[in-house]
Amino acid sequence: AKLQGAVGSIVATARSPETRRRVAELGIADQVVESNAAAVEGADLVIVCIPVGACGPVAQEIGPYLAPGAIVSDVGSVKGSVVRDMSPHLPSNVHFVPAHPVAGTEYSGPDAGFAELFVNRWCILTPPEGTDPSATEKLAAFWSLLGANVETMSPEHHDLVLAVTSHLPHLIAYTIVGTADELQNVTRSEVLKFSAGGFRDFTRIAASDPTMWRDIFVANKDAVLEMLGRFNEDISALTRAIRNGDGNTLFEHFTRTRAIRRGIVQIGQDSPAPDFGRPHPGLPHTPLPKPYAADEG
Ligand SMILES: NC(=O)C1=CN([C@@H]2O[C@H](COP(=O)(O)OP(=O)(O)OC[C@H]3O[C@@H](n4cnc5c(N)ncnc54)[C@H](O)[C@@H]3O)[C@@H](O)[C@H]2O)C=CC1
Ligand SMILES: O=C(O)C(=O)Cc1ccc(O)cc1
Image (tube, rainbow, N blue to C red; front, top):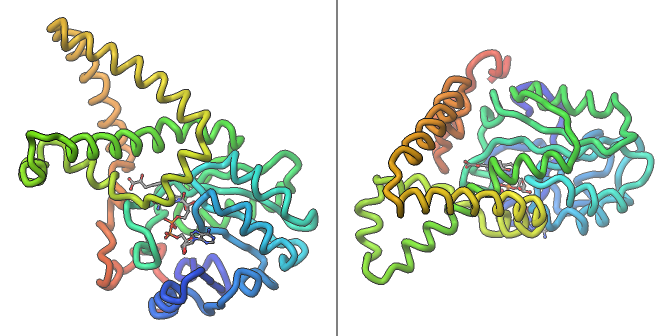
């Protein structure tokens, strides 16, 4: 945000002293403070970046310290629960504009971030009814400066869409990696040795943060169960096709899904960071391309 000129001064905090020390070391923020209260005092924009299950208690904690007129936002992967849990604790003189940048990797912590993370990614805003449109526009401008494309929708719609595009895929990855691990007759070393046969791509997703994903499934229960119901029907249909030796059904299905992947590749949404590669913890971050490069150093 700093490099892209989207903000003046950044104040950061985290629960653990180790994380705060690392944030200071990396120079991500102008100031690192020890409490959530100190972090939000006098801030024009507050972005809560924590597991969705922790959003209610943290809103309660910061509520009394928010400056009048401040914009309060978040980055949580579920929006209905965040609106439900945070709204009651926020004073009426602040603007609450929940957000979800649909960008990330299986890594977490301060080392996992990189300045290009949001370039050509979507950021979804879910302002509750009655939100001052100028607050929503300001937050949209912030995410645009970081390189994101911004879209606004209701929290309910967000949660349904993300249930199928993000939450269900993670559940499937968590499941299959566990299934392979528990097989009696396939040793762990064989799973690793032959992982290039498809398994490997699931292991990346299944390495995602357990706390974050526990909270997502608890918070988005209804939408995930809805999509899981549809998924189970579809997997039953494919199971039947395999049992019946019905190659046509399989071929038609795989042809349809291949076209979906090709469409994603065409619009540049095919990898966590298409033009910049993976963040390498401990290594210097990739220099920013223009127009996202800082003017000075
Ligand atoms: N990792 C990803 O790819 C993406 C994550 N998100 C969302 O962003 C949010 C943060 O995720 P990351 O930045 O990846 O996680 P992170 O692990 O890098 O940071 C989470 C921070 O929250 C703190 N925290 C955990 N429990 C807490 C509690 N009970 N009270 C106060 N602080 C607490 C942790 O100490 C840590 O500093 C989550 O809601 C996640 O759903 C959204 C888009 C992508
Ligand atoms: O690593 C991946 O492929 C992800 O899917 C990252 C991710 C995780 C959670 C989100 O809400 C958005 C993006």
